[in-house]
Image 1: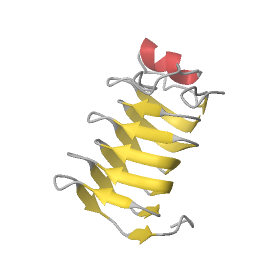
Image 2: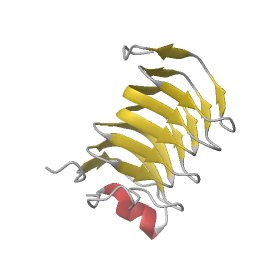
Image 3: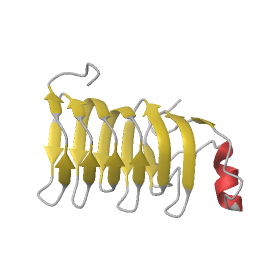
Length: 141
């Protein structure tokens, strides 16, 4: 698998009142570019998400997001749950702990309500973070 290719495994049943596009997210195999979001800006997914390679999320995930590679959360994104990836860069909202095995970055406009565990943490001036940090380690927080 190339460095930009990714595969995605999702396990969850969409809510009964979910829109048709939300129901279609039940089983997803993402494209080969981080520029194509796994969850679009108006999309919502509830459940466990596993990703490989570069992954971009612009919508909402309620649940666990784990994987290898780089995770990028766009300005309209929201993750409510645990995140564990190699690299995490967020310009959106995260409610829950973040474990990044290489680097965690809260970009402009990002919000985090939770702890960060990463060897390197970068926080932009306009980011808002309420939590604890364990820097230099990737042991669970």
